[in-house]
Amino acid sequence: MQKTITTTYSNKRTFDLILTSMAIALVFVATLLLNIKLPITANGGLVHLGTAMLFIISMVFGPKKGLIAGAIGMGLFDLVSGWTLWAPITILARGFQGYIVGKIAWSNGLNGGSKTFNIIAAVVSIPVMLVVYYIGEAIIFSSWIIPAASIPGNIVQNVVGLLVAIPAVIALKKVPFFKKGL
Image (cartoon, rainbow, N blue to C red; front, side, top):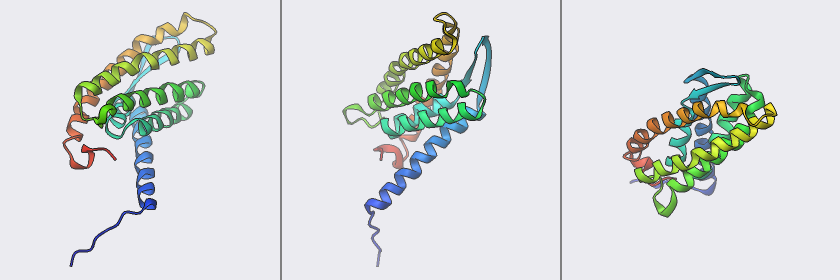
């Protein structure tokens, strides 16, 4: 006799909370441990694989998890890594970026399954991220010139993230658990 397992609303919410928490942790760890500080700007600049993880989560799980994982995961990194002043900017920039990527990747019922839409999603999100950081840094430095120095590093970070994310998402979407989304 085979036992049927019924998923209740509470079980689904618990599972969703676990997935969201894991997404936040993955973005945080990828940002914290897999990064290179660039010596090209006065304000530092950081290239990290948190962006790749943000793209992967947004494409695999959709806009809500992308927003939450990007905002909290990278915002938390800023708070614990000496970039505290950037945390509010990061929360906005990466939250918007995760949401945009997820929204486009999941449009028309694609659920992140289209390589073309995933690439478009990431590319469309990059200018939004750049603008939010530029405005935030302009406020921090009281200058519209200084923030321009961080644009090349931010572009490199996003390109690397995209190059890592697309093959990872293609591979993940072949796994039954990730095919349709949750």
